[in-house]
Image (tube, rainbow, N blue to C red; front, side, top):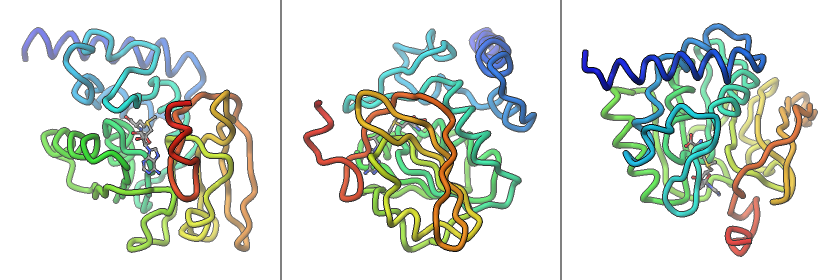
Amino acid sequence: MSAEFDLYIASREKMVREQIVSRGIKNQQVINVFRKVPRHKFIDQQYWKEAYSNYPLPLTHGQTISQPYIVALMTELLELYDDEKVLEIGTGSGYQTAILAELTKTVYTVERWPELSQAAQQTLQELGYKNIQLQIGDGSTGWQEHAPYDRIMVTASAPNIPQPLIDQLKENGKIVMPLGSNFGQDLVVGEKHKGEIKIFNYGKCVFVPLIGDFGWAKEKESA
Ligand code: SAM
């Protein structure tokens, strides 16, 4: 085992202790996955030293990999038991995708920037994930081909839950996403019962906008 590898194991332990467990994440399977997935591999090497710090880090195209606590909170809120079909919108670096793939059977993930999707695919392949399918496109319209989904996670913010995502969610399914404007959003869980979504609010958060037909117009990206 190389010294570099040792260093990152220790950094991950510290991240789990100080940012995830101490802030109230309780699900032991979720906690263990954060010990395992090498976050530094999903970002540019110039940021590796900061990979396990308590803040978002830059990707290309002005996008970000979310801070570890938010990734853990959204994962816990999704309530995965290991055989769910999950749709993720906003692949970004692929880090959240890997976390989901560790906890469930199949993950479908959509990203609008080809370069990000391709980089994520390469990282996920190198790490040996075989239960992930990636698509490039506007995820605000979902991914109809594989619907319905047990769970949906959106890692970019929209004014409302996009109707295609509600339609593609199974009865009794859950969707986790940030809702609001680009000045701040609420992290919500939506549960689908009898075709209707019941919303539960889990507090303030800040995400990049979901740009697309059922999200924000393109101009919002530079706003
Ligand atoms: N979960 C990612 C990770 O672990 O690296 C971070 C996601 S980043 C906060 C949000 C991502 O959503 C960005 O990569 C952005 O390009 C993407 N995005 C925004 N609008 C989108 C859309 N309509 N369809 C698909 N992806 C979109």
